[in-house]
Length: 452
Image (cartoon, rainbow, N blue to C red; front, top):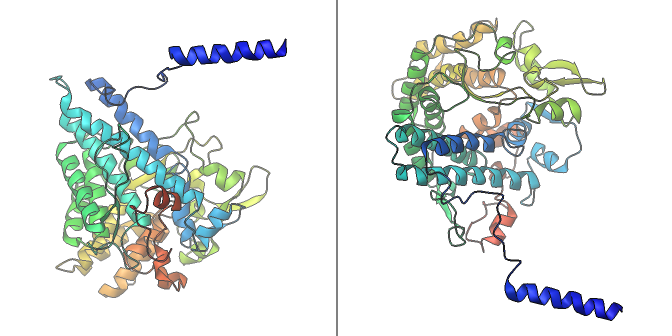
């Protein structure tokens, strides 16, 4: 009897296979080649692209934490060995956080590439295709820039066009042939594409007042950051000045920036979260106590009256009631706090540094910019008077103003100071390793960074 049922079962399987009854295309997702055929579909797709930024391997947790952990603003107090590698600046190519961040950013780029490819095919006269393309270009530029900050450039910074780049993929992946590995482009080629995307965004995105969406001011501000990183100081100063001139000035209090969402006059571009769409920062600071504010940050302020101290060196309690030193920027238990990606104070500090390093150094202007940022937090005016001392003071001010916002490590990287600041004997380790699985599955088409 058992033999009879087995034969019947096998006969049924073979019959279904011959008649191809089991062949079924998946219905749980849209065909990317036909998904964006109308203006509303593109708008929905653009809103969905922001979700890539919100993912845990990207700004939702890891990217936001690891850059400060690799610097001197955070201590590793948890149990993740992959985080410990980052803190020790001894990352291995099989680090899963590195892999997940890489993959998440490239998945986001592919989403945006799909939208960019489809926009020219939309014939709806009421649809502002230039504005939509500008927003998509802004998002793509942001993601490529973030790839370069960890994996690209040289140990001395990002201004060498022959430095390490990343695979520059500008077309969507629809087929197996589209998914063929792309060799890494030079740093110069990647930054040229980033600036091209941003220039189109600046020219075509309307000046909407929405910190949660790409807008003309955000594109101009972000371009100023990119220009600063690659040493185009006159251009960076001009873009930062445009943003400052068009703004209504810094928000009056430092703590107030993080008590509400999209604070007018301060938040230029802010990643949106809610109780139903949470980031993981509260959990990592106060839940599993994976990271904590480094005590060196407290002493870096050199003044107990600086209003930034209780925000950035926050004495709180974790989920179990134990004392922790963290930040009040991310202390909403429901994970609904937004993450600031560009703030107005950054424009003042970019302008200050750029006018010092540019073709006509302006000590008075740089001093004024620096003191504008310091005054908001009750910090005393800078005592620096020489160009060199002001450059040092501006670098420190960036640390004091933006801890827990993913600036410190990259400021040191772009100035070629990361290795000497932290005693890294092998400077090649300043760049992150390309995920080993990417190197292997590409058949070494994607080359590993030197030193790994």
